[in-house]
Image (cartoon, rainbow, N blue to C red; front, side, top):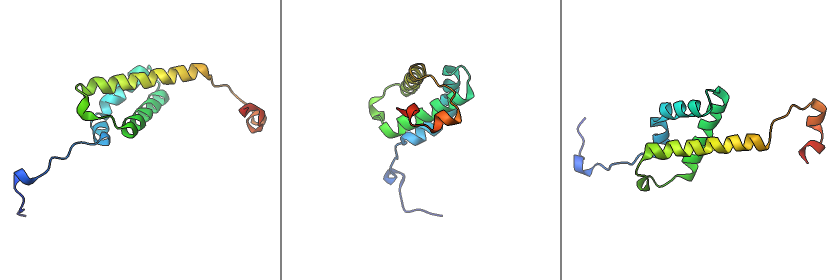
Length: 106
């Protein structure tokens, strides 16, 4: 099917943050697994948090000279935040009665 557009008229579309995440997904997943010491749930949480952070904050990709380094450092920092959060607020088991009371939430 012939087209009337010349190659010079085609616009180059810059990759979106989602595109970059999808493109680097397997590498990011390996990093998340390594950082979480191969804890599947923790690595999935880290990858999810990274996706949200990267796609919502939308850092200026033109200002990033080493994208791979930026992605790794961002993921590492998110992991450290998760670890700090877990140590500040350790999970504890609650009974059904405790879960349903207001005292626990205060």
